Length: 108
Length: 405
Image (cartoon, rainbow over all chains, first blue to last red; front, side):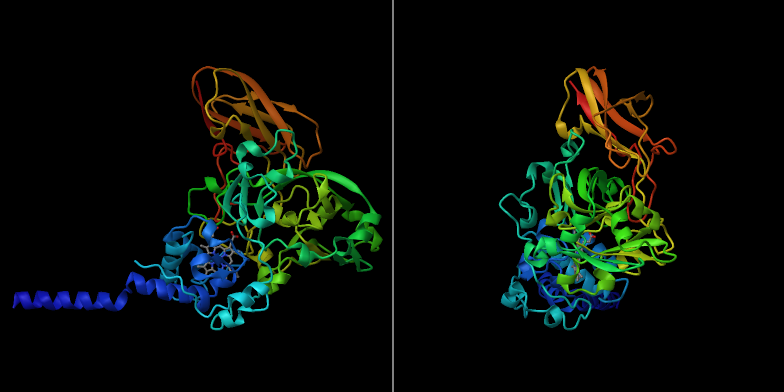
């Protein structure tokens, strides 16, 4: 009885996790799509990995970034860069994914 | 984790030739309806972007291809900062020769005057002539010392330069238009460097209003340190607003207007506002007058250890919109101060002065600081905390630690 209850809880935790988090590979695919198409980051930034040639903001291959610093920038924007989070242009999940993508491709 | 390099719907050829708009690319994101018209941004052989490949890589700290800082020790010890060492801070991409076209035919329109007119650069050159030294300093110079997480380039001391401009006094131009019309309160200058991007001018145009009085000392400059104003610094024509932060010295100048209201573009309304951490809005002061400030340029931790004995402590000091009156130097972290001596020519209140304190140091570690005064204000010890890390002039953060052996 106790064990089956434990397993049941375990099952719920496990399935919730599957639903919530993408695998890293999925995040890279989805991140590229957000970068190039959904958010249009490509229009303003060079990122070799994404094949983008935008020249309004800094070339993302030339800056040092962390996933957190990208997240900050995408959430709050700066200058002409839109505040994707504050202005609800992207969802929090999309911001997490595109930040993961940029942090793992910039300069590589 | 596998890296993905495939491109999604990206028509690279159209992109590069400048015929593609981002409408297709960002169809779902009408946020960025822009077209790409220049590609002057690739890394050159020296690790500098193409548009400034002529600069001295060794003098510069590259934060990004659009944010490039002068080393503390490379700001120039002959008063003027050489062009090849001057920092780069771009809100919009530098315009290319092709976009600029015939430089003498560059146009600027003057509005809010009795007889609004448009002048070409060739016409401006006939209207008046002057040379003036001013300090160009990014509002965020010193941001790198703030401890809360501030977005933006982490400048320490090197987003600043002392520059000789040549051009026409704005007064002459205003006079040629019959004087200022009506009850203007602001002088509003706008660049045209956003135009090639196709971005919404409300968000992308660098249009800056400053108090009207600034026009009396302002000039329209076409030469910088003896050469035609480089595109990277706003050529062929730039507004110079002496004593005011860099952003107000609008590059690629297309319009000067005397207005009753501040510009409503983003770069005026919400960017460049000095607000408390956690707050923002246009009710807070804009980055206008620069405060009194100084910093040491030699010796520094960049220049390595210093030999015991006689040492020249050298630096620059600025008064903001007033003449800098004095500088004191401390070698013990601010416990005691000695007055430094100004050296070199005085190029007017808008230029910085160089200072030197000759002293003798025995082996050990030292914290060296400088403290400038313009007669009515002096540098505070601590920075004024603010959300975006602007206008830092606290002496403590700007001090240097050196080791004498």
